[in-house]
Image (cartoon, rainbow over all chains, first blue to last red; front, side, top):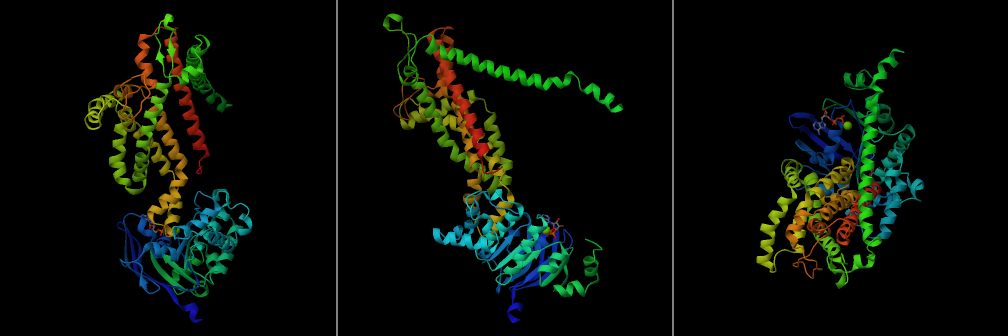
Length: 255
Length: 299
Ligand SMILES: Nc1ncnc2c1ncn2[C@@H]1O[C@H](COP(=O)(O)OP(=O)(O)O)[C@@H](O)[C@H]1O
Ligand SMILES: [Mg+2]
């Protein structure tokens, strides 16, 4: 039990501004190791902003200002001496819309290892096969690794994106509504994958589908207007929430 | 019924305008091609010049009297001159323009939009006679003083053309780079790429067909440019031995000689053959850039 309770990432008093607009307000949240944490809430409440502040993907947006700390394995990722490239290798990300590179399936997966220095052909082959297998895509694509990734279906593309992240061997995987552009069958596949991967990785998933949060996560945070108004074990959030607004949201009274 | 009455007036002669215009355009294009081809082929068919002589001989004596053996129509110097100045111009302009395109889109979008793109548009709008004149008074003089020779040279032609085709390459290449989906760039960064790695290994290979198209369009422009080149290249009917030698191109050869020739003579028709060569090469460039654009990885 204690292993499951270890805090992997701690956000402390996080404020995030886009220019003058404050998108996150004093967010404090612990992400536990080898668990799935779901971030739910109505659209525009700051879920993506929070997720992207965990691997500093907000850095590339102009006019973003962040206050507070994100402690990852004991070090603040916003301290000036953080190596952002190394950080993003350890904290991978799957996006809302599948975004494969316009290159072959093989090259998509091998891209990460290659830029991080892997040149050995046999090692790359091995990584590609392992990552695609982990993402439950190997059997579907093993005969066409050299064809364009853009020829895959949406669901396959999203699993490819997951495999691409797994190929760099991250510790944490951030997923921003990874199923919102997918059909129900693909969604089920991704959810099954999340269930398998949680034993090895720390997963944070944004979803606006509450059934999905309930199915895949152990902890759930509910965001509202940039604040976390409820954060607890998923079972507790869904059956016995502390905040009245949580109950309203979960029963579909807004959002 | 009411609908029918309302619609009827619009189904009138006005609808015939687009197809008629298109038809006129097609007929005009075909007419030009047929005309040039007919004149151009006359050199071989009527005057009995062998294609071998035309394309591989360097002897150009179009007004040689019959008793001396008749006109000698070796067009090789024109062809080599065109290829050399075009090649040099592309060699100089392409790397610069492609880097500029990446700079505009990826490195400094605001400076790109405010300063570089307007500058490029101004370059595009300058008439070629002005380029030629500046080339004549600055580049030719500079080469003469610093490298020797007369200054009129392949080098001068290449430099002037390079500046002239930068706008073409930059604008087409910028569109290509800009068309790359931003989501895929985010994915590359999120995997721990540096900006450079993302541009070099993800964006560049994907937009390469577009970049090649840009270069081909620039090449076509350089190949077809006449006036500015003619002003700085010397126009001697010789094959250059170095970049500092004078030479002549297909385009400058035509513009120089066309006033002195009489319709129907071998000389006149030889100029039409050169025009035909220009036309065929331009068509080839267009077809090539279209195939590459279609074959591109990005759809
Ligand atoms: N790049 C941006 N510039 C300005 N405002 C933004 C930007 N991205 C998001 N926002 C705003 O921040 C708020 C939170 O957005 P986001 O984190 O994307 O919410 P969610 O993912 O929960 O839908 C929204 O009001 C949104 O309009
Ligand atoms: Mg979002």
